[in-house]
Every structure is written in structure tokens, then in C-alpha cells.
Length: 145
Picture 1: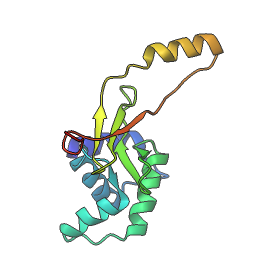
Picture 2 (picture 1 turned 180 degrees about the vertical axis):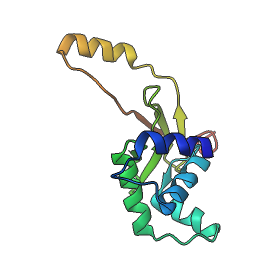
Picture 3 (picture 1 turned 45 degrees about the vertical axis):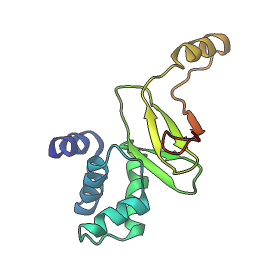
């Protein structure tokens, strides 16, 4: 984890923005739970369980800064809370499956839209830099038998 944090610090932080102790703790919580899409409230709860007292407002401000610095991507699953995931610069963003019953979010790594993007760019002269796809339905545990 320290190696990942060092890489992020070198790439995204400068004299204008420092990786303060609170920011580092929040980043560690995100990296340690990178398989989940955490909200500010989720991070607050994780830190409190560890006995770490960082205010919710500080967490919100830090998450917004991380989005601005392109460390995190803000995702909205239409449940009233913004969630965050680490930005991956090496690949296109993945898609999400959102369970309407339990709220579980699963990632779909396959990006089947690359060909469609090429067609749109060619036909419309529009340079696509990213896209977001969310599929809503019921996970294996919740779907009717």
C-alpha cells in the first residue's frame, strides 16, 4: 500500500497540494477497500472503527480534492450518495451492475463500447474521452428464482 501511496503522491501532489496526514489516512482507507465503491459516510465509519477521528466535512473536502487531482472518480448510483473509486489511467473506465434490491455494485471489466465509440467519432467528428454505463437489475442473491 505504501508503494501505491508514494506513486500517487509523486504523480498528483505538488507544492500547491500536500499529502497531509489526514489526506493520507483517507487515501489508505480507499486503497485498502479498492474493491468497494465507498461513500464519504463509508470512509467515516471505517475510520471510526479504527479509532481515527476525522470529521465528515474533512472527508468530503478531501474526496473532492482527490477528484480534482484525478486520483478518484466520483460515481453516482442514484442512491442519494456519491461514491468514489480510484482512477485507473491505463484503461477505459469499467461499467457497473447495480442491484435494485440490496444495493450491491459489481464491476464489469469488459468494455464492449470501443467499436461504438469509433463509429460515433468517425460519423460525428466528436472526440470521445470517456463514457459511463450502469446496468440496473437484481444480483444472484436477490433475483427471483
